[in-house]
Length: 148
Image (cartoon, rainbow, N blue to C red; front, side):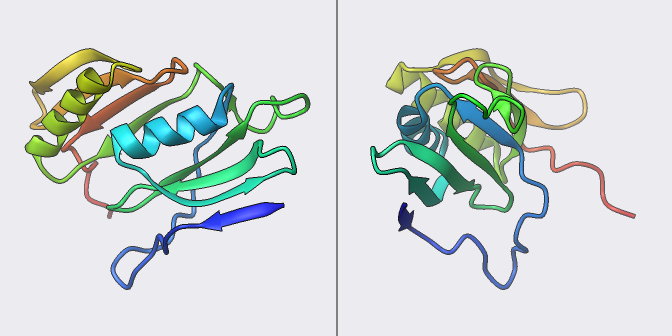
């Protein structure tokens, strides 16, 4: 298997993820490109078979966390959310980052902005997008409630 390790997804301040949302893409190469080029994820590693099909990839969100994904193939349906059924909320630090994600999605044209940037009644600035595979992503400034 070929591996591509493009970055170290952890540093002294950001602990490595211990919960990994997973999805299976109909076009894993295309999905990897969209998630990195348009949404801002960082490809950490991609394992491919001899034909270049992505069997497993890990993408980091720069502020922490990440997802695992691979090509949808026979026998993989019970291991990951099928393409088009995945949804996630991604925390960004600044409202301008939310606006920038929405702008990149519009400019790129492969996905769509489902809900333009807006302020919520709980103090977040959010946008909702659908990627080319039909998965739903919400980007916002709400980091979740403080942990006890």
